[in-house]
Image (cartoon, rainbow, N blue to C red; front, side, top):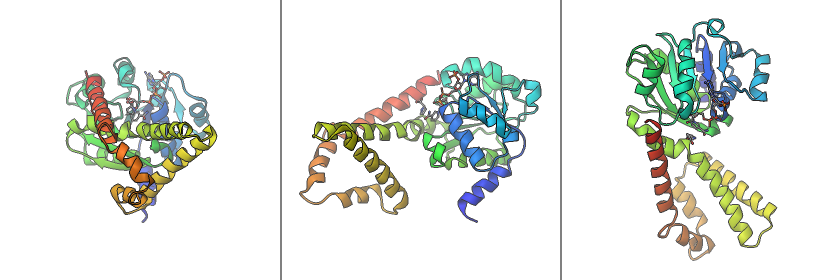
Length: 284
Ligand SMILES: NC(=O)C1=CN([C@@H]2O[C@H](COP(=O)(O)OP(=O)(O)OC[C@H]3O[C@@H](n4cnc5c(N)ncnc54)[C@H](OP(=O)(O)O)[C@@H]3O)[C@@H](O)[C@H]2O)C=CC1
Ligand SMILES: O=C(O)[C@@H]1CCC=N1
């Protein structure tokens, strides 16, 4: 069985009602992935105060948009995709949807398992919580998610979380929740760094004399094509970089700048440290 067939099959084996709280950029991307992989829309409840036109249109496919707690019925899995800053308030309105056997999967940056348990469950340490960090390539099935499960999460619940997360790309499980802040800084926020690279490469092309439109196209296709090559190739990123670099050539001249003092290594180390710290601060 191919891995994509196995992924779709695992998702179809997820039983019960799945509620998504927060169908914004990330929650919406995950919902798109689930439906694309064949999850029955009728089993999906979406809790979202201001649904986009796209999310509203999914009601025609059978998803239940903003039902009352009574109409939603028993929620087997609640995926929380609201902003961490709005969770204290949102948590209170979500709590009535959570029963003692509900599995909660949170994708909120910085929000710890302990905080989730305290807000959503009657007793601290009484909840089945999976903390996960996806990224936006999930929208095209090419995301990567890192997940950590609270002790109370059963093997069956972990399989449910895995199926939902894997429908949007690959999944790595870790045992230490403390890794999640750095994970968020690398892969959760990481797509933004890559898109910034495309923006700045285009700007640098314009500064070097190219028309804006051509520079934008060259930068976009170069980032996208290099990403695809990295994805398909078995070579390491170091070898792929070296393959571009002719001795004494143009790339070597550029890399001397990018790999020099205050180059990419310094900048990315500082950027990832700043994002890691922000994730820790969001927990407070
Ligand atoms: N964007 C990304 O790349 C990633 C984001 N995340 C995490 O995903 C979460 C969402 O981020 P993102 O999608 O970017 O943010 P968005 O603002 O796009 O989405 C959050 C959504 O939650 C809605 N919302 C607000 N209050 C409630 C409530 N009480 N009940 C239900 N929904 C509510 C918001 O509505 P309204 O706008 O009207 O307030 C909004 O539509 C965050 O916790 C973030 O840390 C994780 C990985 C990557
Ligand atoms: O910027 C943020 O806080 C969220 C988490 C990772 C990506 N976006």
